[in-house]
Length: 446
Image (cartoon, rainbow, N blue to C red):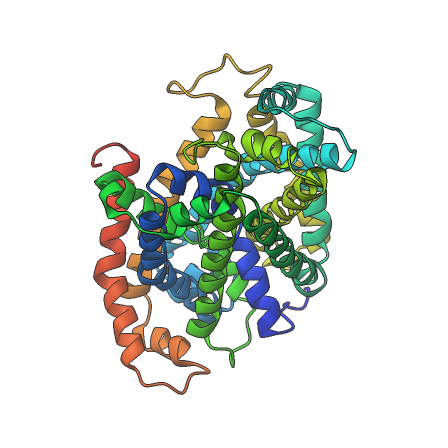
């Protein structure tokens, strides 16, 4: 049986957990959702909900993971011997598998864009970038190759273990991500007309807030911390007992908010400086921004930096998705390397239909959506909120509350007042918000 792995330091755990949380949501989805939802007011709601809703859920997953010392499936079995609760961990593993299958397709797109930028291909217009994006997504060879390479990187890192794989990669990638972001923000703020974008992003205009945008802010803040699929249960199972869980979770949440703010400051000043609308939608990252960067002095360099940080964020998130799958199958002594490679290969074949959704399999529709979009909808709108609700119910109503309090207070010198506030949020506010967001995504309320 392989020796149980652990993070080498608190910093390694925080950077790896932040890497798991900071991905497509923070850099791709957050900017265009903010643009469509009124800018500064949406940002304020996002920060508020992240601290009051997302952070308590993150603490919950950390408590379950370290309290059990087990990966996602075994954690619930150990903490609640009535095996019905293992469905929470199994749902998380299945959800991560499906999520990784189409997430890796987007990772392949980012890889292809990065290679294109590195190759010095000069593209100036939005129409040309639109054509490039269509060419990438419409080519079976390009999309499947990108999918394979992206997963290959994941298999190499995850098979190397916690300290020598995920932690080591995160210790390099996360600081570089912050450095690249700061470089881009400084460049963006020096553009003529940039301050209009800054005002849009940071100055709240509550007249633009609607019931729908409030629910968007709830959903974005809640799901931006990689909670709901027990990824953080698995990550925290490798955590030493003398490290404060609330402090670590708070660091991850603050880093996630910081990256989201940096993303807005890097993107909106550029968008406004070149006369584009902030409501461009999902094409903002792959079509609008590349064309804007290409019109700037040294634009190809800044575009490459932007794509590289986006690639790093996408990779660090995908590491956590593959890790929860691998950990679930190595808990009985199976080889990590072998399991990582087999899991990665299976995910590759499962991801092919999503990769071909915009080309060969474009005509295949499931409830009016292609394979890529239908898988995304199933994972994001159904499995994730269901998993989140089950975790919230488990930690408050099923898990031994003395163990919950012990794990919460471990490594802390503060009074138990913070624990009481957290417990109250988990009992009432968090489940109510999960149900509200779930009903909104299904179109029942909004």
